[in-house]
Image (tube, rainbow over all chains, first blue to last red; front, side, top):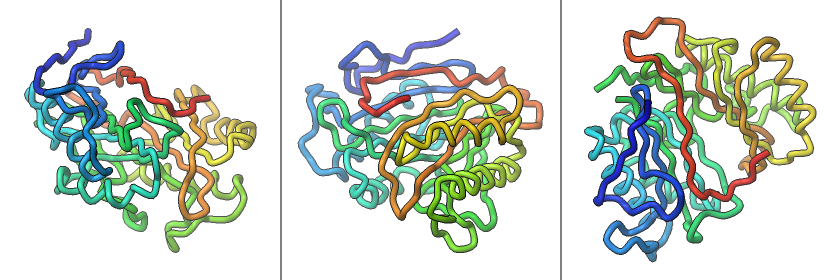
Length: 124
Length: 148
């Protein structure tokens, strides 16, 4: 069984995917820096986009009764690996203790020409 | 919250604000392990074979620290800088996963510091979890990464 997470506090999906899916005690979600009010890309540098992405993910987790502290695995897709340090600085503020396992890769391209996309797995 | 627990591995340093592994719900999530010599933090060698073998050894160290083993791995994410090494990757996979190999996704990506490969995974753990039967489900966005 799986539950689909739908919340107005995170951006509407811009394709045939769900904001979040919960199954067998885990929640799966991914976000780019869309503004949940306008559903358009945030104009900003990688630090600002990372903050928006994590706020979007937080909203999805909150809707499912979770917080970022429940995240056990992240995958960070960067348009440019040179942004790794700037992304990490913001990321670290959102995961101050018990940071998730993680991987970062440079993607050949991201939706909406985003600078960063973050995928998370959270454990209920 | 659930049973989330971070795993530290003596001798293996993270290069960012992430844990080497996290246990939750009967699963162990292992961060990407590059072919780095743990004693120096530098690439283990110049060839794909040397780095890949070291990446597998690092993966095994983290799995053991988290109460798991290579034969309990269910899914892997492999990053390589040159997909031309795919055949060699397959040979090593068969060597380290001789029976019931895990699911796998491989991407060609740029990696820093002369690294040629990084391997991350999700594994079951030896303790029997009292939580619900865990199984990582899929999700999809319109990401444009190269998959093979």
